Image (cartoon, rainbow, N blue to C red; front, side, top):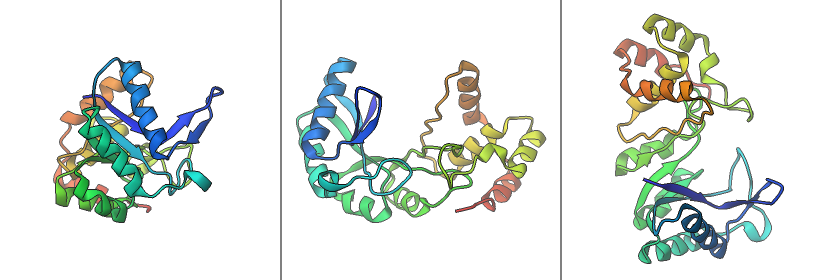
Length: 216
């Protein structure tokens, strides 16, 4: 299934800029349909720009959620998108959007950064797919520690004869059965390693140990 994201655009020089207004969201969907040469996008995620990491909307780019959802509903009714997803939202925003019918939520979340746990709880309650980004943390943003550098994760990976990344990804998959991982990589070897994490079943004792590792 093709899943796209709207809410920000790239300038010719590659700079990412907010694009939160309803007309901009529609234009991004139309551009995606044209570039992918399809008649419908399976899911379109609305990227809110209220909190870091990343862009923060300001001025005319501060748009209320209901106006954005109305535009996406119109696109869904027209058959141009199949489902509506949300990205970088709070539990309150997800609750506000529930009547629309939300296909998935994409928030920053990892073994060591569980600040989005209230959003995940709401996804569990309503059977919404959970798509954690930065699932291994990120060196590029403060407050997002790299999971693979944690001594306990490294030690457990050694005991299980797997990589620390596979341990971290397996923990995420075990935490909710509707978790979808989007682990970025530019190397085929890493892609194979990430896919193999889906076959790893962590022992209950290991899960209990990992559950105690949290920094936020």
